[in-house]
Length: 123
Image 1 (cartoon, one colour):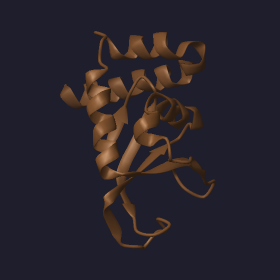
Image 2 (cartoon, rainbow, N blue to C red):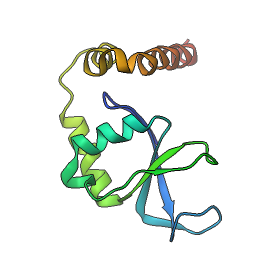
Image 3 (cartoon, rainbow, N blue to C red):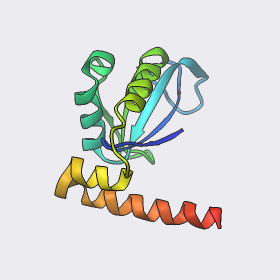
Image 4 (spheres, one colour):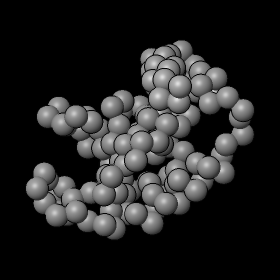
């Protein structure tokens, strides 16, 4: 699942058992939340300390997503519900620009690119 939020972009998948190494069986009760930008995960952790407070960011230069956290599925479900409840804007890309300011310019530009790709799918 890809999730674009005012805090950043995340890819969420079932984690693998144990340390999550490639080839290990999937753990259906644990989610690996991945990000390409560390500050996106930092912002998510800061927003949801009760649900994600014990999750440390792991960094790896040998994976396609350099940053990741491991979360119990129940906690991740709660975070997603709260993200939905937090929506108080009528334009997502503008909200990202306002929320992240100059530091989020690259993210906002990427969102415009994604919007264009998905718009072409519609037409």
